[in-house]
Every structure is written in structure tokens, then in C-alpha cells.
Length: 114
Image (cartoon, rainbow, N blue to C red; front, side, top):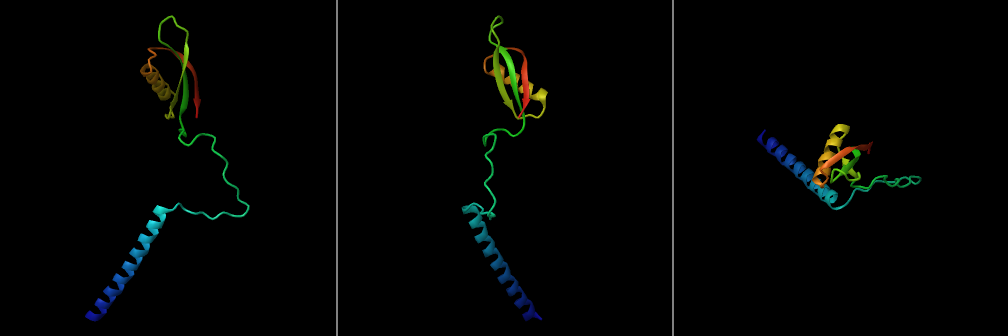
């Protein structure tokens, strides 16, 4: 009985060690090389993205009319917000305009979804 148990333990250790060695080789291969996906003969490359890679995928573009002095012409200030809420995006844009040196915010010209 004891020899069967020790033989079983040795066999299990060999299988676990073999599995762990294989897993480490697979991890090293995955870490050092990008995945290679098979392409079919008629498959074309993907179309280029409409937005640059670092551009936010959701949010709003807010345009504000801002001024530095009371009797000055309005200047357009644009701010890109990652918020999905229009009001929150507008508040972020107003804070960004004040931080950029425009203390007077006239009105919202346009709010557009990205």
C-alpha cells in the first residue's frame, strides 16, 4: 500500500513539473513576441482609424465663448472632455477656461459628442 502511494506521488510530481515547465515556456514566448493570428487568403488589413490612437473614445467637445476683459470680443475656447454627461463636460470646460486665464465665460457655443 505504501509503495503504491509513494509511486502515485512521484508520478503526480513528474506531471506537475512537466506542466509547470511547459507553462513557463509558453509565458516567456507570449511575453517576448506578439501574438500571430492566422490570416485567410482573401482577408484584407483593417481600415485606418478615424481618430488618432490617443484620442478619447467617448465624451464631448465643448466650445465656449470666453473673454479676459468685460468689454472684449468673445474668443472661442475648445475643451475635450471624457465625460458622457453634457452638463459635466460643460462644467469641466468652464474650469479649464478659467485655469487657462479666461475669467469671463459668456455662453456655450456648441457641445458635440465624440
